[in-house]
Length: 418
Image (cartoon, rainbow, N blue to C red; front, side):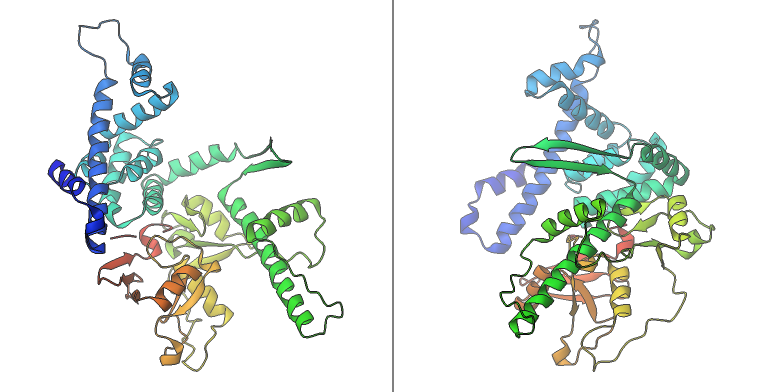
């Protein structure tokens, strides 16, 4: 690894081709992981009780020694020591993967944090199940994969931890400069998701009605002329929607009904025959007991992942715009923009015709893929292309001919680079 690192450092990236520059970045990333693995080993050793030459030394005070030599706070030193001890102990397989350049430091941190509450055997099992996928997944998607594996390995424990965490729900507020304030809500995931969807629904309604008002004014049918419209950003409209909904001051347009929120659950788990993790779109995996309770709630949509009906049929190639039911099916199937690493929710994406409609591409679930506006433009205006495989993996080919994969949602629980 040192030879590879030396070779990259000695090269002048400005004199290399774009492909060589990208390869150099990959080599530097792998070298960084290797160096962090070595550092974790040294940190774990430095925090271990020395031999008899220092009999009064105690591991409880290791953080102070490390804090002063690294010029960091004792609390930061404590976190680093805990991380290093986990990598040197029950998660040594993760340290070995870092040493080989197959696991990034951020992914290693996710593995340590997500397995902190389980016993050693469960932690080792989760590491074994997830480390082989690390090279394909972004850090956020890898964390979700680990979280899903933890729930699958210990569903009862996951439910108990959720119950304890739920007791800590709260809303707090503090002042900021310039007449602003922060309102922070810590909520169960299903409640936070429902609130977020409601805010977004109202914000989108305002934007849509404002657009309609501008069209009316433009055609001289609105009477008043002017047509200032709504120039607020989506974030600003969500903030205003929160105030309007909580204080009951929402005026026109009228507050929409409950935003549709769904839970993805396999048929066996829904029937109580299995205890597989359940997915809350926009959040990630939940313990099966929580998912079953949500799936039985009439206010929630159930997305059964077995093909229980034949409701969704191909529409034929004469129609360009998909029906609402087809759109909902694709959003449920894919959940996010299908460019590798992008996590934009499918509900806020364009539905791209992989084979353009102008070239005879049909408006069907097999030819439609959710892409955020940026990656939709990338596919339309550059030489990036993609294919969808039978297992729902989306394979992209960049302008240099290299291939990159976005795996199906079920393989990471919520969101891959290869």
